[in-house]
Every structure is written in structure tokens, then in C-alpha cells.
Image (cartoon, rainbow, N blue to C red):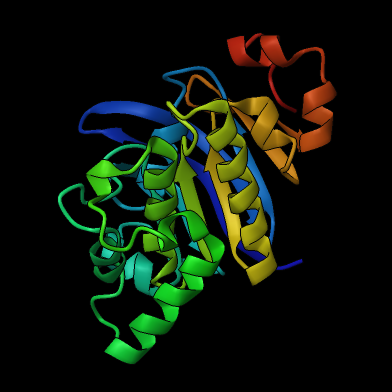
Length: 240
């Protein structure tokens, strides 16, 4: 099985504040992998360090067997890596179509048009509102737009940071289902999610973070059945 992302002993944080303390994690081609854990355990920071928007301290970050540590976000996008942050993930004063165009600034008009139609097929909700301002959309529709904008760059691997935060139960399930379906178009997914049961229910594998480390990892179905999940969250059980 092809390894898309390989993380070894990763440490990082913000300035002099260290958040990650030696993370080891792997993601394989076409997998859906979920990271869960308590607030402040380093889940979001982990994605930001990989994407070059938080400070890298030490360790290895390999994407498709190539070292990508320290690379700028725009360079990572060109390599096929997408990232959907939890907040500020759309341009509120731009229309739906303008947001999508921002995701393909380096594309010619014909190719950009093709890719926009492709994401409209994936998210028909926003297809009906091309000239609506992003700020007028519902929370679920904004999240669909954020994902669509990243898809315009034609990534093969996307990282999601809390994609269902503050959404209604209906949109939470729809967003996770849409993310899961991305594997059908050969996109590998790594997601940080507070709705553990929902995301793990559609995942292949899961990781539990605690205090900036991996407390436990297993097949998603095993984590859902594990009676020790609460103790993993508290860091009372260490992963072997």
C-alpha cells in the first residue's frame, strides 16, 4: 500500500511554545484517517505544522516519500496537498463563483471552468447559488464552498480541521459523507474532528492525541468499540 504521508517524531508549536511532542503518524493512499482528542492536545497544530503555518521544530514530514518540512503553503498546494482550516476558509465578500475562481488563479479559463463544473457536481447546493455572496450562505454551505475551493487545485491529499464545527446535525453528517466520498476520486483524507463517532464511523483508521502525543491508534471500528477511549483522552493509557 502506497504511503502518502509519513510523520516521524514531529515536534512543533507557536514561537517558543511547544505543542507537539514527537508525533508519529502514517496515512496511506485513498484512506480516510481521523484524529480525535481533547481540546488543546495539538490536533489542529499538527495540521498547521505540516502545512507550514505553524512552527516546525524537529522530526520528519514526508509526502509521497519526499521531504516537505519547511515548505511554504503555496508550494505544498502545487505538490497536491490541500488544507481546509476551521475558520476563515472562504472570502465572505466574494460570490460563490469568485471564491472558486480564487482557488484556480494559475489555471486558464477553460480548465478553470471545467474544474468549477466538477465541484458543482459534488456540491449541488452551491451550484444553485453562483452569484450569492459567501457571507449569505448557511454554515454548511460555506463549508461546502471551502472544500470546493480547495478541490479546484486538484489535490490528491486533503487535510480538514474541524469541518463540522458549529454546524447543524444535518449538515454535519452531509459534510462528513461528502468528505468520505472524495476517496472515489482518488483523494486521500486526514481529518481532525470533535464529532468522533460520526467521523470514525466513516474512517479506515483513527489516531487519538493527548498532550501533544499519539496516545492510541487503531482501526476506526476498534476505537469506536474501545472502552478505554476516555482514559486515552486523559493520557492515562500510553500507546504501545
